Length: 288
Image (cartoon, rainbow, N blue to C red; front, side):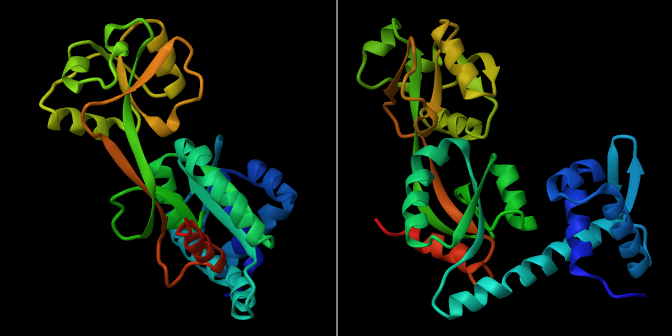
């Protein structure tokens, strides 16, 4: 068996993450023949087939999945050398891949990113947006060094970021819209538009604790669609306050009479093994 090269591992990850040679070549700027030769050489070096070519792209073999896992780990440790040495010399530099919930980016992350970039100009931040399962996966496989998560998040080091309080959303002319706070029990008697997103269990648990049962008339995933349905008078709903746009059209948001909320935090898989840039962002987030 030959020597496995770091460049081969990077190409393997690119092909695996983008699902094929074409997309990986576009992202990396390398030609498809170059990437194919690199994978073939890596397979020869390792003595195993790593990828199976299909009409719609490629699929990892069992050996390929093992190789990708080890490649991510090897590349992550290699990429820590330069920023680690810089940190030991009193400098924080290098890339930082930050994964955020869409509702948290503009409200909890953007301002912190601005002041962080002012303090650490040599850190290049790449922002990824997704929902909890995606963010958890990115943190676990090394695609992101730090991410916004919903507590609790077992197995990760977390720093509290803020609370996302749920509010009632109603058509402007609705009788409940005239109240300063809206009873959950009253919302439960109305046709209800229930999210299919990750706030769903938080909402259902809060309604249950309030001793009510929802009359679910519609379900939708995107917040924009839910707002449009409320504006159309199809029903009422409960949504996270952080995700709401400044202008709601003919819908109005009102506080609930009980507290329904989710606690958000910044997370890294391990504080001892995180990059200097990720550690610096964690510490920066703790500053008022």
